[in-house]
Image 1 (spheres, rainbow, N blue to C red):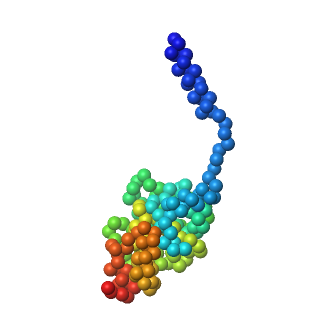
Image 2 (image 1 turned 180 degrees about the horizontal axis):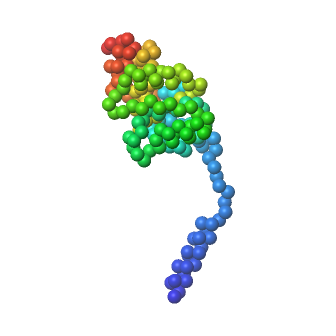
Length: 181
């Protein structure tokens, strides 16, 4: 009986400790910016890329000054991930524009490159593009930049500074930029 009493007293102590009323700490803008900086990779002052974002990451994007989110991930690629309608609704609620330009693993097309160019040209501030890892977003950004005449080596440098390698599309980047190496 003594052991039961000790366990019961321990249980009560744990319950009372868990029930202490402490004020809830909500994330500050500084905490949200810190999270964004650790997840969002800046390609330049206007464009960042990211792996799959969550609905909660929308606030971090807003704190970073993002005014446009570009989703480069097709719906259903990972059923547990937020789908385009979920991200679009959360972005709209936060006052952020949203565009979906899904890129499957089959590659890139001219209409997708043109859609990315239009999205970036229409952005009223910073853009955050995301996919599963950030790679497809970076590669699409690279192709869009090349089509607009940016030097391939500069594109590769900026993507590399963000931690991405454009080698898979380098020949296309060179061709779009009018250069062949």
